[in-house]
Image 1: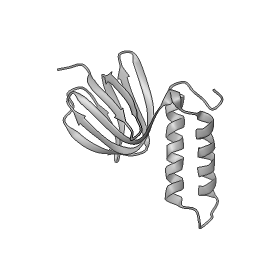
Image 2: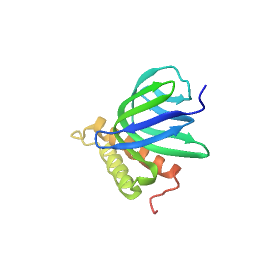
Image 3: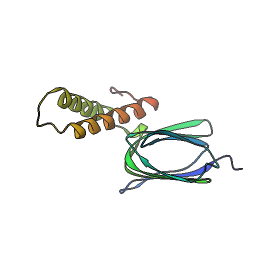
Length: 140
C-alpha cells in the first residue's frame, strides 16, 4: 500500500493546494474525518472548519467553508467554496469579522439574520484557528 496520497484543494477562483499527504483531517458535515492512504472511497459535504494535512515532518493548516470532498484510495480532492492557507490569513481582518459577528448575535436586534451571523462567526473562528496553528496571531 502507498504511504501517501495526492491532495488537491480547489475553489472556484484557484487551485489552493496540490501536494502529497500522508494523513489529513477534514471538516465533514457531521464532524471531522480522518483520511489515510488507501481510505475507502467516499464523498462528503464539508462544513466550516479547518483542514490539516501532514507531508513528511510538516503539517499544514487551511480554513475552508462549505463544499465537497471526494476521497479515493490514492487521491483526495476538496472542492470548497472558500479555502485559505493558515499562513495567508489576515488575522486583524478575521478578528474584526469575529467581533462584528459576536456583536450582531448579542445585540438582541430582531432584524439580525442569526444563521448568517453564526456562519460569519464560525468562518472567522476557523480562519483564526488555522492561522494560530501556523504560528500567526492578531498582532503578527
